[in-house]
Image (tube, rainbow, N blue to C red; front, side, top):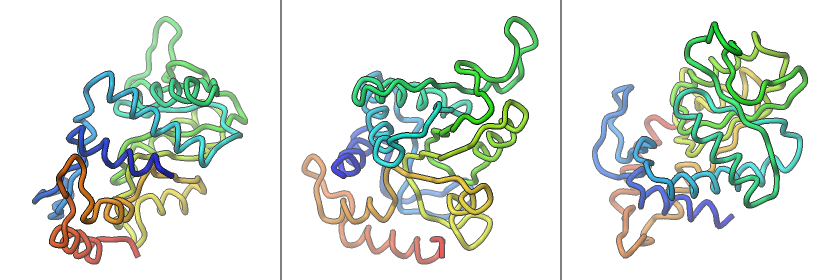
Length: 223
């Protein structure tokens, strides 16, 4: 799966994956940080779509009706993933996303783009899931829209950290809703693929950084 290694290098070159001393929103001190808000160019959007499309093509070659991007960060992800699926794999899937506030004029409603129907197999496209709030809100939203099957969740990185229970947030979503969850890469894959291997002549995860990341996972990682 060469796209995984390429995606890790892409995140570094885009300034999305960085290493140092950071504090997460939950107050955890972490030696690495993922800021998907640093994607900001057309070239990055095109490549990002290619990586999402590769993950979808690998794990979900059939059985998908549409892609859904939760507002706000999921919107461009669903659009670029759908574009790449068509351009690279000749697979033309519709996409849709939600409004934060329901529109009460014109066509109305809370869903923009494809209008999901009962029985559709929907794939949620997200960036990095921390607490899973947007995914849970999406599932609740669709209960009011149509009796769809939330088939899978595609995310860019699985940090493999505990959520509200001993398992990871992604595992919580698997257990609570019975949906499949596929990350493009996991933090374990990042460590394995970057340890003492340079990207553009620089080593980002040396022995010391790897030790700090392992200590972090030992303390906060899912069991």
